[in-house]
Image (cartoon, rainbow, N blue to C red; front, side):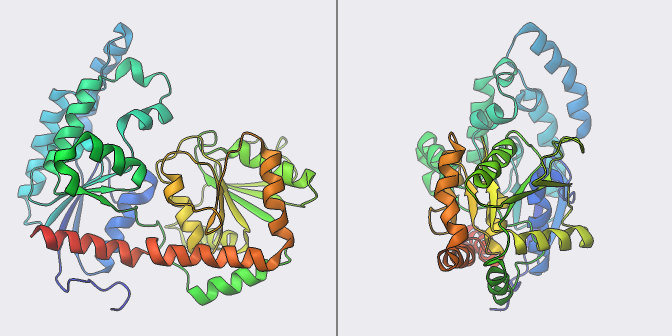
Length: 388
């Protein structure tokens, strides 16, 4: 089968419902944008739409603020009134076209969708998700009963619950044993126009051997992604005699006059911009490791994208990461409490070309076997065909 060809041989019609605009490459780490793009490249018709009316959020936000002031647990997206507005909007979108499947990117949207083949893509349960993004605060504004109700409705509405990792699949299946067959392991597709050619990757790996050690950090949320830990690890490697540098993409945590000499911060690079994408590809070609010591992470799609370029990853064991990074196969999932211990573990790889080359090549092999875009799109096509 040619790359990009539909596996089932039938052109499918998808409705992709995003919380925001799925055509916006900046929304939700670009996952809706790239999913829509990859499906279209395989010949499918995809209508992308914002599922939840922006007006509804504006109308209900005063209630959310008032509830916060009263100490009650309320978040407007989980209220019955918000669901009613969203359900009406989604019904209009679904009835406007004859769709084979409807993608929903979160529980609130999936709970409001009514279609024989709802694909609910889930990467985290609500509790750890909100604890990561709104530590402490979420417990004051979130009603656990409302959250549980939306989750149950989403699972009931879905034909398939596409779980980004075992970290989310296992607890969901335990909570909803009556729907075990719905839960499918389906990591998000990578946010790349295309994976680099395998031969090109091998040449890039060979070029790194003997080159000055380069670490790469990619993330906008500096603290949650562990950017400060990445800086500390780079310093620890330097203390251990490894002349490592760190390039930071996404975040800009340092003022120009306060940036460590061994850190180069480039700011945000857009994959949809050819110049930015070429720069990012150059950074990945030259990087010895992607360092992402996240304090909280659902899956870590940047890790998988690095593996596509044969770049091993140094990361934490947060969330769904252990299902993505296998120690010694495509990187290391580590405890970063003591960065000097991590540095001592990693430093020998910069002096052992054969061992590093094997690790980097294995990272690309794991990507091809588990995470290649063609595999993910083919899986979606099979699931839609099975639901027909």
